[in-house]
Image (cartoon, rainbow, N blue to C red; front, side):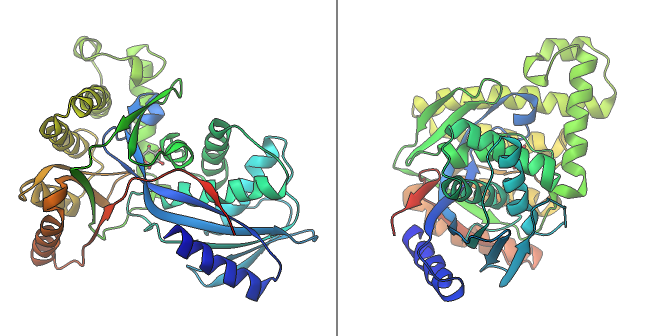
Length: 377
Ligand code: GLA
């Protein structure tokens, strides 16, 4: 797909703007386990996938930025100062502004952007866009940056300029992904270990087609609850809280439940990483099921369709476990499946979900891929 996406943006660039651009591509991601833990400085286990956002870029010698989105079939011009519009172009303007905040001025430039990362499905189409655009803009600015800074600046673009108070997981994995590996990431220190993924398992993404909008406030409200819980427990972040502390404290019901999710989920990530390295795939699957139950019962970010989908998936032959993935309130379910059973499992899950909901689910198997990189043209 990278080469394909590269050809499409190159052709469009030459038709629309002319000249020879550079081309960058950044992946979407799955998250095996560790949901709604990143902004509490906890642990996550994401992996980059073979769905990408591809960006062609060249300086235009003008005072403005012109960006063409092939997905939306539109071209937008951005003047120098950032002003939020609520539309996709905020990601582009926000990235340019975040670079400016870091002391890097991006000259006037033209961009053509194309993505096959599904939007709103919980596979981070937004981080793919931010990181691809940021890498492209760094190149026209003639600047280099540490991968960790690219991730942090891209996160800042989303928080400050798009207006979603997200954690660092998505931008970090989109920058640091390694083919065939998940990352066990500590969201406080940003230290990570590679977690090699066995060849006989597959990750299946099944889209419920129910859509969330993280800017709608549910995500921000969960984050605020976690911060309240941390402050009532007297810790810097829920990463530092233990089940004991929670039992001893007298937190209000809702905040108690949010904290119980985060504390339990951090433990599940660490257990899943050990199980994965010991080849205990059934245990990883059970932990994923437990993660879904906790997101449903304690964190309250699932919906009836993703609950049904995760349940159908978990009870399908060859599936070790399944859970809703990403910010939540809909989106996709990730299933851990024996590789030789994944095609049949995908067919059965989609058919049953369609039968029971009348909704048009779709699915794809991910190849675990590298993070952002330039495509030679
Ligand atoms: C979104 C955010 C991430 C993370 C997840 C939930 O994807 O961008 O930072 O909080 O939700 O785990």
